[in-house]
Length: 326
Ligand SMILES: C[S+](C)CC[C@H](N)C(=O)O
Ligand SMILES: N[C@@H](CCS)C(=O)O
Ligand SMILES: [Zn+2]
Image 1 (cartoon, rainbow, N blue to C red):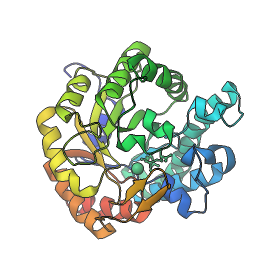
Image 2 (cartoon, rainbow, N blue to C red):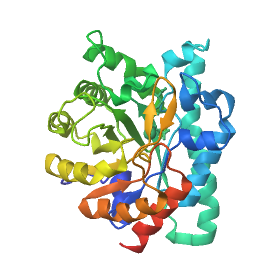
Image 3 (tube, rainbow, N blue to C red):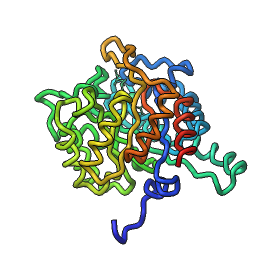
Image 4 (cartoon, rainbow, N blue to C red):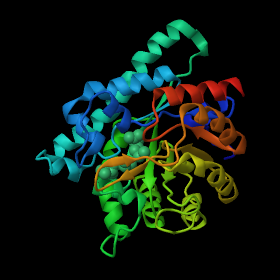
């Protein structure tokens, strides 16, 4: 990007020795702290009922060494809030609250960290989470990606437009599109970023259930072709897929894009979207994450963290491993 000013995300990556740590599972750690999220809004129900727990999760990830906090808005949508009997204005205020809670946590943590570490302390960035349409459906569709014949490009853009605008206006440092399961939704997102002319960087992360393709069965080659054309997307990768898929997918993405690669896998447990439970499967424990994070970094990932069922202790181990082995 000759002549262009570096973004906050590029600066952070560069000033961190080429690889930064994002946080871990947000919703699943909220649950560990006692939140009840068995609801169509999933973790976003806490924006209404238990905002103090949201801040606590953010603070725990900061203490664990996260350079980026992902907000509580993954499953926070205006139609979702309307179905709870709230007004559009109330729904929009809750979206703003998700950014505000993360910014407040970051700023209060930053003040004490600066006292202790002076100039060595790097301020964390706040990434506004934007879950896929499949997340909103609350039936595990983000792991299938088959939205059916009634869901076209226009419908996906209409679904994402207003939430995206409200979140951008709330002032996060970047946008984190999460668990995108197909090419059509990636297309909708890049078109909206251009149409709204969003000025902060974005990452777009896909899920994968076979370790090779997007959940829809479309190749990542096809999905990334769409994203590579958009300068507003600075990083692309995978979230909430099993950790043992990451090596292959990082190598694959390396060949398909020049953008920064971001990976934050889940623990390896599998979400049963109907029973709303995590089912045991081939899992990584915290120590495995420490070892593999350095492998993922060496293969080319620039942003590394965890997704569902990873915890602040997972992030602490990843952060220590990456900092020890720069
Ligand atoms: C990433 S999944 C575990 C999120 C929850 C899902 N959208 C549901 O509501 O069932
Ligand atoms: N940022 C969300 C992603 C869910 S897949 C969370 O960690 O809860
Ligand atoms: Zn997840």
